[in-house]
Amino acid sequence: MVRDGEGRFRAYANVCRHRGSQIAPEGRGSKASFTCPYHAWTYGIDGSLLAINKESHFGKVCRKELSLFELPSSEFHGMLWVRPTQGDPVDDVECLGGLEDDLAHWKLADFPFAHTQVIDARANWKMAMDTFAENYHVNILHAETVGKEMKANLQTCDIFNNNLRFVYPNQKLDLMRFLTSDTKRWPYPQIVTTLYYLYPNVIMMVDSFGVDLLRFFPLENSPSKSRTVHTWYISPKVQPRLKEFGYTYEERASRFGEVIVNEDYELIANIQFSAERGTPSEMLLGRNEGALQHIHNALRSAVGHDLLPVEEN
Image (tube, rainbow, N blue to C red; front, side, top):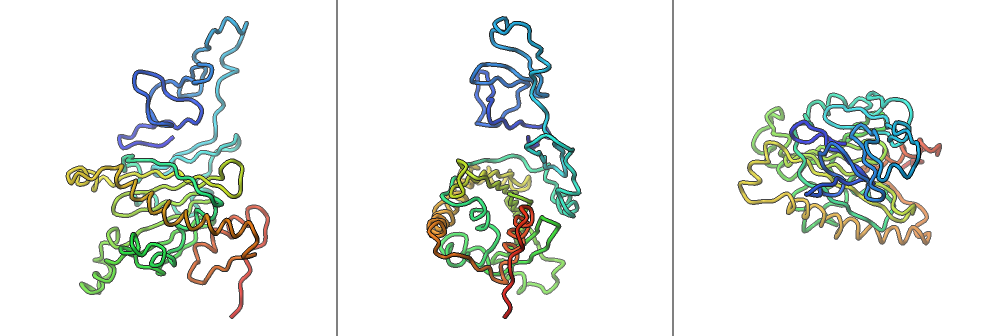
């Protein structure tokens, strides 16, 4: 579930869709009940079983015993965290690892939902996530697209336990250097993109347009395929101007997706192809790719692998 721009919660469901005269986009809606499209059992938003199709055919049944079970969840600073298995409550300190002030600063609950899209890649989910965690490649691969706006191979990197904050500047940085040396007067939301790696599989990007949330998943139980779920929440300051200039949510999301599909994911599919054939047998991460080093070490540590070896000069 995620909070929409009016403070209400909208439910995400993988199995059940909303019924009624108007069908909501897949996985989104705000109705008070959900009906399974397979056998038409109906559940309330609290998971209680409200109705059983042809209930008399089942004999004596206890609806309470057949209700959906609750997953641990908690809301932190406008974001809803859900553990996909039952267990202990979600711990905000464990999840955020020191990013509490950052998330509170952005006031994420004020950002209305704008658009969502699903992008599949013929590459491992970690490789798909890697494309967002370094800008060394930007002026090469994206020379004719986002490379015209971003400054390549320049970023900050701050670690928060398993999480990470890294910042990419755009070309306006040079203009601000020319206009004033007083960095306190610089309009940072206009000259940088602030990114967060949220362990284990989320990249969040905050810029002047709003917040782009990217979640990466293995696809079809294959290490060679992945799915990226991209959701964009528009800045409340940008929303009225975007509509005023006739620039639609779909157009912005489409341009975002085209760069990923036609440039990033097309290239990493070739890298995946080579990796499956053992050429090369290993990959080298440079000192300018600190975010990648941290992400891979966090994941390696979680599964009990040694940290990445460091080559001495």
